[in-house]
Image 1 (cartoon, rainbow, N blue to C red):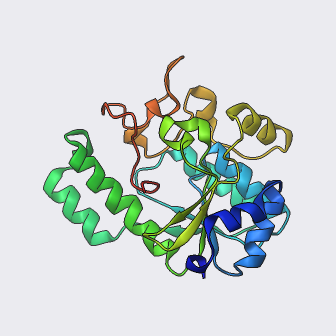
Image 2 (cartoon, rainbow, N blue to C red):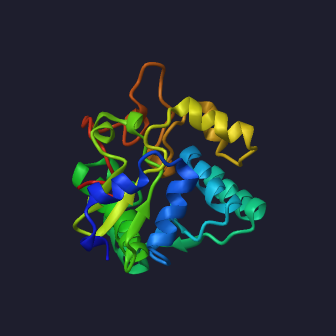
Image 3 (cartoon, rainbow, N blue to C red):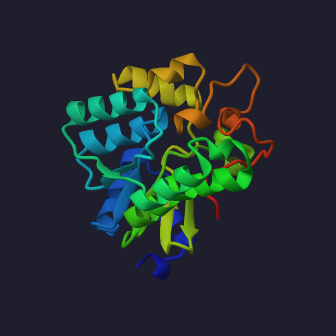
Length: 235
């Protein structure tokens, strides 16, 4: 059980191992209990590639919020075709979406932080919790340089709320390293990354960033908070 193993012990087991070796160790130590969540961003495509070509037994899942860019679905399709792997999809609960949109309209998230958090909760957090049920390790494409908030995290953490470990195999990678790896290995990626989109979420909530802007500036840009998160990775 994840709760019986201390994060520092798992960290020592993973230390000095490369991404492939780390994922293989987790898959063998927690058989059938490791899940990787992808949003088809460029970091996630690197992890998917490593899992697929090495046939590492890690379940790959994605959250379809219903508001994704068309380009994300294109990468989804290309990824399944290239690697011949299943990617399990989790959708929001239908009645909750219908109620929220009926009462507040399709763009309620622009009107208040509370509304935006509600939308993220319904479209992302609740489906994610379903996806993580019964799992012991959650793999994510978070990198330290993505935000000040994320730079303070470790590459291995324990999520007491969900009773599982979170592992970020690309935590110390730079954005350039990620792009170079994708180009070298001919990995399908979202073309929006070539147009200034470094972090890609739902279409109404994502824009390209300007030179000099923070990595997360393109997400929920109408909010002033520096620690903006959708709720998936908030402790």
